[in-house]
Image (cartoon, rainbow, N blue to C red; front, side, top):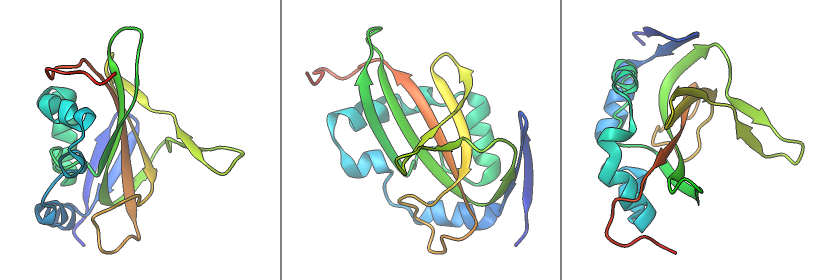
Length: 157
């Protein structure tokens, strides 16, 4: 494995960029595209604007295709009118720095993500949820939250 080292904020990320890129090339549809519900279509419609340029650059350095998120979920329409979304990606490798995953007493977990803009947050943890990687060992899960307006013609109730 030829390791690519990327520093972002106070994280040090180590990616097998070649394997990660090859894995994303084999992914035919993103999680949002394979779902196709109204919430996912709303996300897809805004995908280019969702990710700040510095995040698109970071993902590219790690070998991750930002147009192929593993999964995306809309959790709530906020009082502001924005919709709260969460999604994630994976890359083959490791990282040093704060792990965003926080174990809950009931056995679940929550995330503590770093604010990048008023509408975008990111964090890293070890995980393989719904991953397209054949070998699930040594994966880093890139978690993100974003807040989006509704841009499609009809908004679900």
